[in-house]
Image (cartoon, rainbow, N blue to C red):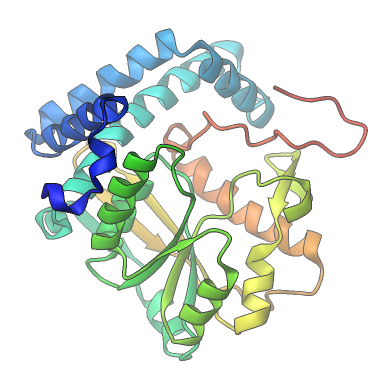
Length: 304
């Protein structure tokens, strides 16, 4: 990327480590695929050993969500989660630094007609993505078949956020700040697809409590609100890395019927159940490293 694409302030020494990270991502993106995946596994294993706080969060999440697993099985899933998310880092680098067309041969599709039928209503479509380690690569590969806009959370590092936003803009038609509700509504009413991931904890004011793997989780209310405001069909989408670590599968589910229902907890419970269904297929690929149960109902103790 040309220097002119970046403000001069980003060349201050305080950003040099960020530039090194960006250079590493460009390098990783162009490595031979087996080397790329091997490097991702190594990153994941290193983080599993050294990132003790994230490992504790992951251990807590998996113990809460998979109480039927033995202690040894839970420990293995924690380790597998770090490995999968390490691979996810090099997949993200590939999505941000290469043309998605280079990867067309790596993706297969299941039930694409569900999204096509939803779009035929001429009300746009709210595609529900999930925070798997493959999220950004999934967005890039999805763009090969449908143009979409994406809701995003800015990165705290201004230089990295600039790099990330530019990279995603090459994949998506528009990137929409997560607080820009008007922008989301405008794009949907224009008949666009908006890619949106509602599976993180955005705090008490934005959420209702709904079950997620049998635990009460602060679940964002905005999904139902957007559907109510726009009439856009809500289409869940699953994206997974296949066991060969070389290919990927996109699967669209039918647009939700009778959604929203008018009951915020029922709507949030329905969305969580769909997300849980997707996670159970490949649980190690989910971002268990984040504090999904950070906000607790009144009177409950903190989990983390």
